[in-house]
Every structure is written in C-alpha cells, then in structure tokens.
Length: 332
Image (cartoon, rainbow, N blue to C red; front, side, top):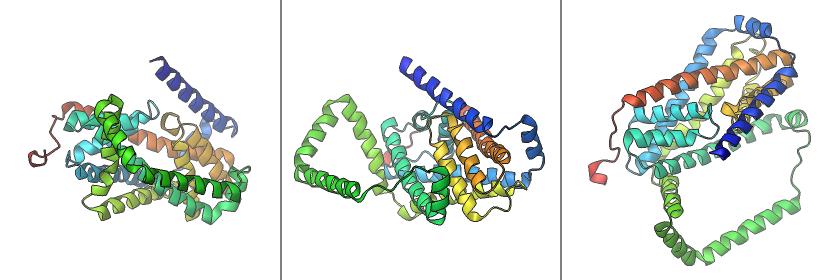
C-alpha cells in the first residue's frame, strides 16, 4: 500500500513539475489560452475527436481478434467499454489501464484475468513495433534537424557495441536451443506447482494468442489503421488553428511521434511530458513558443476530455451489464 502511494505521489509530482516547466518557459497567461480557443475551427476539432473515438473502436475490434483466438467472444460493447475504462484509469493512476481493462472483462464476460492480460501484453508489443516503424519514418524525413533541436546529445552506438550485442544475443539463442528440453521441463514444473508460475502461464497463453488469430489480415489491418487514425488526429488538430494550419504533413508526423513519447511517460495521461515535447516540436516548425504551448495544451485537453467522458460512461455502463460467459459451450 505504501509503495503504491509513493509511486502515485512520484508520478503526480513529475507531471506537475513537467507541466510547470512547459508553462513557465513560455510565459503563458490564461488570456493567451482563451484567445487561441476563440479562433479555433471547431469543425476540425470535432472531426479529430471522431477520429480518436474510431481509433478506440478499432483497438476494441483488434482486441477481439486476440480474445477470439482463445475462443472468448465478449462482444464489441464489452471490449470497447473495457478499453475506455483502461484509458480512464491511466489518467488517474499511471500504468493502471492494462489492469483495469482486463478486470472489466473479467467482471462483464467472465474471461480469466491472466489470459486477457496476456493479450494486452501482445497488443503492447505490436504497438511498440508500430511506433518504431513510425519513428523510423519520421526521423528518416527530418532526423538531422530534430536530432539537433530535441536530442542534441544523442549519438549513434559504436560498431563495437552493436557487434557485441548481436554476438551475446546469438549466444543466448544457441544456449536456449541446446537446453530446450531441460528448460521445458523446468517451466512445466514451475507453472504447475507455483502460484506465480500459474499466473505467468496464463500470461503466456494470452501473449501467444496472436499465433492463433483466425483472421491475421484483419488483425494487421486494424493495427495499421489505428496508427493512421492517430496520425490523422494529430494533423487535423493542426488544421484547427490559424497559427498551425499551414504546417506540412511531416509536421503532423513529428507531433504524433513526440506526443506518443509524452503519453508513454509515467505520469497521469502523459501530463506535462506531452505538453513539453509537443510544444518543443511545434517551436521547431517556427510556431512561437507561447502559441506552441497553448496548442499542446489544447491537443492534450481534447484527448483527456474524450477519454474521461467515454471512460466514465463506460464504467457506469459496466455496472448495468450482466455478466456473460464469453466462451461458447462447445469450446469449453
């Protein structure tokens, strides 16, 4: 309990510190925020919100693909509600989203927590691969100026370090192959006789569900479309303000990348880190620092309001949803 409180206080302090840093460095005033909001094109903003909601629906559909691989069929209403509850939880306590969304499905669809949590881990791995691909494209387009402005101390690892890492990984793979049978016996004993082992075994079942997805093309399509929606959401928001509507498509890509990094920090909903990274990116594209900070605040605010509203409604909805058995009788 004490450890959880300390972690929560640390994340809150970090969020407030980063938020103060972002605001103090731009000398922003409340009137600046009101003035910017007054000239916003709310048709673009509404479109961005709709795109954001659609990305959440896509995430629910993609999750259904992983759950279906284990013969669990909770339905889109329950998966979408769980996804939104997860996002909602992340704005309250960092990293609680994964636990909350799986707990929601356990409550509404009787899906074992460990297995659904394993599918969430799989999702995170797929999301990480997607992010790495987006980062590669973004830095390929504008690596040198972005590196000089945002990562001035970044250096490429030496050839010696790269080769050593490859050799070590190769040796580990060879050892795993040589002692495969012994490792399998130890794992079987661990997962059958140890409580932690049983939990890990459930996670592994969920993680490996990706290999049994019944329609892998659909899973890949949803994964790609999620990132397309994320990009469109970022770019459409740029179009909503006179000061940023002339920015290029690559600017929207960099806002997406830096915003994603910000949201990944251990703060409630990326508060503070998102504001600092996105405003710094906009400044690079010659947006005045004060305007850049206001825009970053608005971008984050639209996401926060959407998630808190839908997440809150989803939480209320789950109170009225009767629990179903998501696993068909014939597959038990």
